[in-house]
Image 1 (cartoon, rainbow, N blue to C red):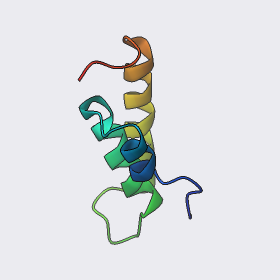
Image 2 (cartoon, one colour):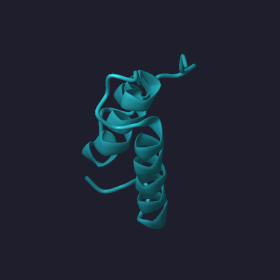
Image 3 (cartoon, one colour):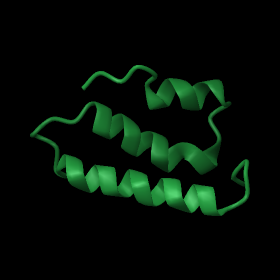
Image 4 (cartoon, helix red, strand yellow):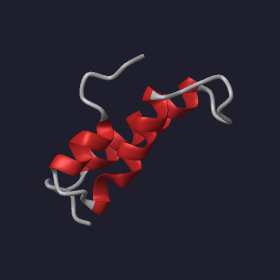
Length: 64
């Protein structure tokens, strides 16, 4: 699945905040996923959703 706006590019445009590194890394892994990866897509997607929920529950912009 080709992402329209890759997570790493979005992160870069925001100045690479540390607080978003985890979700960006998982987003990039999900967007480039292949069967050779250790984690299935569903596991990566679950990590993304959990991190998004954590970020949304905290202060915005997130503190690094």
